[in-house]
Amino acid sequence: MSALSESPVRRQLVLLVGAVVFVDTMFYAAIAPLLPTLAHQLHLSKLSAGVMTACYPVGTFLGSLPGGLLTVRIGPKRTVYAGLALLAGSTLAFGWLHNAPALDVARMAEGVGGACSWAGALAWIVVESPAAQRGQAVGGTIGAAIGGALFGPVIGTLATAVGRGPAFSGVVVLAVLLIDQSRRVPLAHTPSAQRLRDIRGALPGTGAVRAVWLVALPSLAAGVLNVLGPLRLHRLGAAAVAIGATYLVSSAVEAVLSPAAGRLADRRGPLMPVKAGLAGTAVALTCFTLPGSALGLAALVVVTGAVVAGFWAPAMAMLADAAELGGLEQGFAAALANMAWAAGQTIGALAGGAIAKGAGDGVPMGVTAALCVVTLLVVVTRPARSVSSAAPPA
Image (cartoon, rainbow, N blue to C red; front, side, top):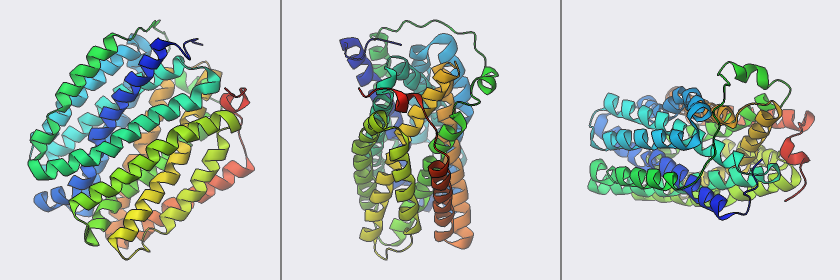
């Protein structure tokens, strides 16, 4: 375990990792205020809008295991390089292309790049963090990513005014700057001989399956909300600027709460914020169709984002703990986290859009809320112990 918890090098690493996930998530989240405009211009149905939204997490899912393997074999730093380069090229393409299939492919390539960036960044920060501070480290990284989601709607709103091409072209400059900064942060990486098939044998009895589900479930909820939220806000009369402002405020609240949830997980164990997040998410999703005005729905979207933020960081810290207990490289743990996030986002976006098209918005929201309730009952009746919860407070 690294002793860099308070060193200048680790502080530099924290800033770098935060910047990498910030940029990645910023361009992922830019689609929210763009979605109604794209749906109008390209004649997209709710299902087609769900497909476009889901293409990014589909790419992340496809790139998760290769990104984890790259992290294990060539190191987190070079994997971050690869992810940033792919993000730059695919985001530039999304800015300048003008038909739905091409935009879907560009979003999918963005997701593959994000899988590499996240695998490298998460493994890098976890390896350099003491076990008793793991929740805080992961929570800070997620907070930075949510900060990117905070500014993503700003980019998307700007793109509706000046065009996607000009608004998205700056990603190339940002990627080059981050690659240059990554070179300056030292990393002693020893290539590992672990293979993808070693994942299966390393995790039984460690609580990994539960942790993976607890990463996937809030992602599923967010996937449903990211498709149906903007479309329902638009139907209630909200303009692109108002939709962007809604997701801006939601992301700001999440960015503050996620590191706090990580610190709470370090001190009191991860299950406390997990239980609160599950209960709050179930209630918020159940209420999704109740507001009759854009302002009321916007407030509910913010509340939903806040309660979802309560258990992402603790769940990912639990997964890192499980990998350590099973002797698995953290690059593969990051890959599992990416896969869980991507699967949840993909199913949420696709199923949410498809079910809502035929049965209304309340059905996919109700199903997701029911999953949260069932998961809460399992967590309460069958609690699991983790390295973080067993460690002394920082």
